[in-house]
Amino acid sequence: MTTVQRTETTTSGVVLLQAVASVLVVYSYLIGQNFDLGFIRTVLNRPLGLGEDFGPFALLLLLAASGYTAMSDRSSIKSRLVRTYLPAAVAVALAAIVVTLGAPIWNLPADSHTSPLAVVGNLALVSPLITGAPLLVPLAWVVLLQLIGIGAAALTNRFGVLVPIGQLVAVTVVVLLAPESRAAQVLVFYPLVVLGHLVALHRRGAVATWVATVVGVLGAVPVVVLNGVNEEFAKWWYPLASLIAALLFTVSVVFSGESADRLAAPAPVRWLAVHAIWFVVLVGVVGYPVLALFGGVG
Image (cartoon, rainbow, N blue to C red; front, side, top):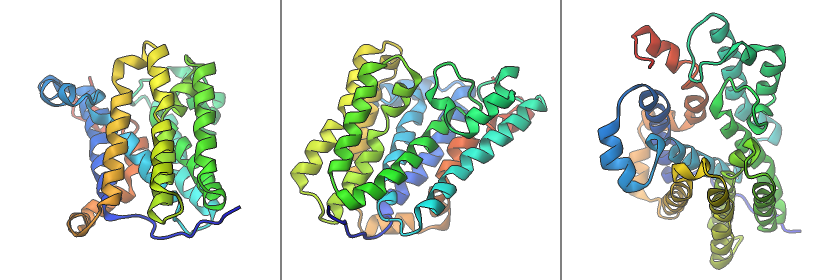
């Protein structure tokens, strides 16, 4: 057993990616869902291969960033789990209240979405893994993967690169055994969290470059496999989005320097980065009712 020495919690490059991802989440899941962005999709999204108005790409960046920061956060695991879970709990409770009052939210749920069992399932973050279960906060799965990543980071700090390898194998097994399940379509993005763990290990010199590279490449296996066997999943270019997100994240961490420090220094940038997960879970719960006040929900 080897205990890995911790270093800084984050870098300016990671802060910048989190801030940009916050903006892209609102752009994709609020603006993109309710306004005609055909021109931008034609000139940007299609040439770049990033579908759904950059939304999944933004979420992948946030997952990688969460894996990286989880490796170096010195606060207790309990406090980190509570801090990470809180936005999801608030969003689910708020969504149930908003729907009960008759206001629109992102997925325009039926009455079954606010049944006691459905609310409990959403609060427990098990609904994102159960095919057909009502979802009050469709993007709450991001919080679930971040929570798993926090526990896995503690193990990775103790046992090193064997933990990321084990996690990638587990995800691949789920994808192979149940490719049509909601669980597979959520867990397939977990390798981005593992990437954050790997980059943190490499940055502190706890794993050789070639090992980190090989394991990182293996992280692409689940999304490539699922893309090949699930026709609906294959429509959205997720392997390409995952590749671009992984490369951009790695470069942003490895080459984070003075320019990144200056760009990440302004308070608004850091505020966006710190509150990124709140944008993810609240965009459909708060954004849609506010947009509806101005007649913008389509």
